[in-house]
Amino acid sequence: MKEYLGFGVAGNFANHLEQAGESNDFSDIVADEDGAPKGIFPFYIPQSATPLGRYCINNQAIILPEDPSFNVQAEPEVALECELLYQDQKVIEVIPKFFMAFNDASVRNDKNAKKLSQKKNFSPGSKAMGKKIPIDCFAHGGICDDYSLASFLMFDDKIELYGECSELVSYSYFYQKLIDWIKNKLNTQKEFSVLEDLSEILKQSNYPSKIIIAIGATRYTHLAETRFLKRGDKIAIVVFNHKEYTIEEIKSLVHKKCIPTELKDISIICQEVK
Image 1 (spheres, one colour):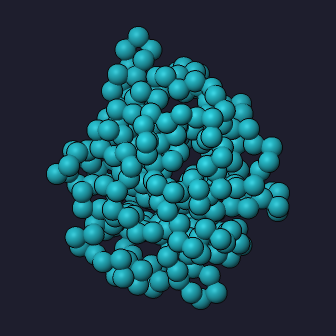
Image 2 (cartoon, rainbow, N blue to C red):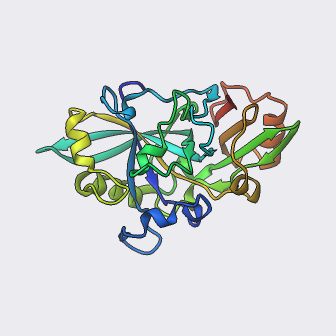
């Protein structure tokens, strides 16, 4: 992952931006259509001299920012590992190869952040990704039809739902519509408001052949929406085959800390907040 460019999609799940208090950040940005995601942001640019050059994937811990006044929430997501093909310095194909659980933890109250990316890479432990699951066909009828995303917060000997349990196909943009949108944004998104020029980032990164792209956070439960992370909390994010497991079974396995990492139909992250 250290050599992969890391991107995220903003606003690909109804009401998440409103819950995160970020909808006003996008007030000047016109979406492609009603319900469309707002844009793409970088969270990791290998070898960049900016703070985005810091490797920020830590699958064991969410490391809070040095500034104790910053409020952090986890963002339970699915990420895709994609191959990029270029022609004449334009992306001509985005090919999803794997999907996985992802945590796009974010600072909510950095008043100095002018870009969305400045709220993302806040420490060496601000992101996490679970085991990669191969994609047979990124379309209806493929493996992703059978998967859901769930997340849990463990604190004070309790375990509570953090994000709403959601089928992957319930993303606003998914499958070919999402891939076409990603390709278009990689080629056309310019620096404007909280977003950045993506074609310039690709150029500065020597047109990478592989990227990780987190495709958006699910809606929060009331608990997650109103509570920021504290040291000692534990966050679990699970992508699982809902034809094989119920949400109650996943919750029980997480609580007992007994989800075997070798299970092929589960991708899990479990991080302690530090």
